[in-house]
Image (cartoon, rainbow, N blue to C red; front, side, top):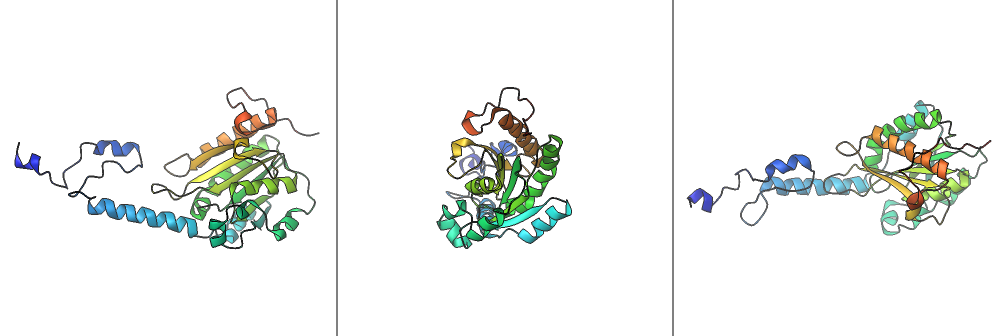
Length: 259
């Protein structure tokens, strides 16, 4: 055995390095003695900082509302019962409830929509700011083309997924789609999730929802997520259900619209 084989250089290329092009997971990082190389260690620290920033960076509601208005889409801003970010992180239950002011705002009489779209900051305002409009740009025209009535887009702060249930119930929507920032990981801090619920109302459980996740650059493309959401909504309107009871493999007929 040569000396280079007995004492490999930490800068030497790892034999697993070629696998890194297939995944964002931290593999083939190499080593320096019993620890990570400096580059890999610093990259981990940077990813951890990005994840923390994503959780605490507030959603720019004004900019999002302005962008929605520019597209001619009615929008309304609401907030959960969590009064601030610290409370939101420590009391997930409050993030599932609307504030009293928001309840009054959504109680104003409007024509009940077929679909209500809720954009919530969730655990990554960064994900929403980056990806939500891209999804909506592809999804809203599909819904209109299908003849579905889309209610005002609801932009929610300090929101959890289940906040779409009281929103949908107050607006009497037949289905809700919640676009929300997912919990950041160390390989993606900007991942958006879509949660679809038939007949949203308080008390719905996660098994009654359908989820499309990892919507971001490097994950599921926003246009592809919109296509999947539209297909799920078609199936939901045909079968009048969502979640684990929804048959997503059967050919779905066009949505049945109210008279």
